[in-house]
Length: 276
Image (cartoon, rainbow, N blue to C red; front, top):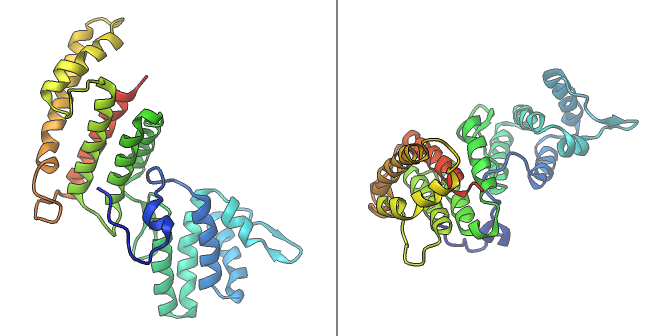
């Protein structure tokens, strides 16, 4: 469920979203280079390069006239860039605590606006938005929806994952969005004009035959498919209270750990559905 456009916001912020939380972004790297220039004085920028080498052991790019900071921010491994953000935030305090606070707000804004799947804690450490495993699952799920016919499911999954961010975190919205993405992919796969929702009946009537044909060369295919579909139906049942419950603005929230579990399972089923 997309949020309404914000008055006065940049067009890109209102209408352009990346295809799901990203592990890296050239736009974010450029913005972090400007961030580095904004919040560290020229006198601090040389020591910053030294601190990066000291803490990370990287070969910081340099030349006759000194360190090549732009090259570092644009070309370094993403793990080193994320670590450098922490180093820069720590050093920003030399310009005063207000400068450091403003730097933290700016860094979080870049990560949020550029759709990266990271977060920055109050002590300036950078972490995965959930954890590394969840990041890999969500990336794989989005990759599986790469065909044009799954465009609606991909967009819905992207929107669902945006509800993990600290600015708009909602367990209910995450579960609801993942369910809608799975339902969209399901309807494409079964390709039945008279079927408009995902439930136990439509799974048995329309999905099972497709999977039986897919696994026809395997021994005991019916037993395998039956067991898999019982798990799928159990997941659908568990998501329904959040899918069809009270509106998002009413008290019907889901604990975030439960929501992440449900989302992980849902994305797994979706990858299975859309497999060639």
